[in-house]
Amino acid sequence: MNQQNSPRSQFAIEVAIVDDHKVIADGLEMLINGSDTVRVIGKAYSAAECRELLKAGQPDVLLLDISMPDGNGIDLCPEIKRKYPQVKILMLTSYGELATITQALDAGADGYILKNAMPEELLEGIRVVAEGGRFLCDRVNSLMQNYEKHLLDFTRRELEVLRYIREGLTSTEIADKLFLGFETIRGYRKDLYIKLNAHSTRELISKAVELGLV
Image (cartoon, rainbow, N blue to C red; front, side):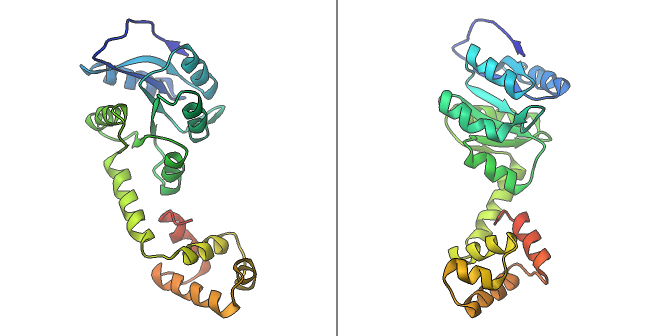
């Protein structure tokens, strides 16, 4: 862990970086400290070091990676929010899959940005979440909008059936789970195949996962 002890500026947004790659963390620190309004007050390279960093002092914004040698950034989110509700969490990661994004946001992250985003976008994200907003980088925002658009195309019951299909249940087993008739479940399956333009169960599940529906 690398904790800096400089006086707090009333004008600066204070940021801490948690990333298991020191080169990346150092690069982010240089980028952020080049801003007039944002500065880095600490760095950590593991989940354990993140906990110690936050015990010593809380930043306004925590840039949190997902993959760490001793844990998972998404799993850390609820813990951080419970102990330090004032800390805003901006996930900064290379994981761009919709399921991972929604998991992070559901876990309490205030924003999500990919590591290949432009520097200006990163600084904007820090400012937005520091002010209490939610920030998604352009690519993630497009994915979320596409997901929400497709989500409107499906009924709650269809999504239930879809989840059971992914779990490997047969139509008979799904019918028993939902207390519905076998033919009713077959109808739902047929509609799902049409809506997702799938020609096999494997393709159905693959497209559902890609869209974040399951």
